[in-house]
Length: 89
Image (cartoon, rainbow, N blue to C red):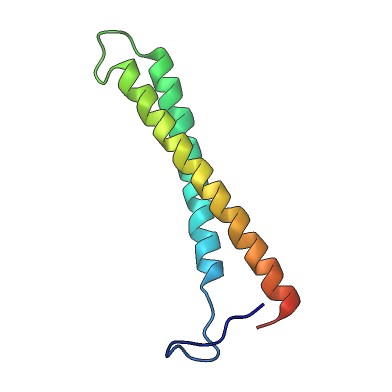
């Protein structure tokens, strides 16, 4: 169901879904790799190391959450691309 046009956007305006797909894919790879690397660094760090294992683990969790957000964005973008392909512009 399409909403009526209310703004001044061109009739043929399209969302940059392919760019968003590329950026979300790159973010997923980067944040997943960072989460794994930081988790491994936290595991091998000693109690007197700087940064501490706790800080590294917190950073790994933050990177993991960002990787999950990127994955969810990928799912949304792929669904929109598929629906755009079936319904047309």
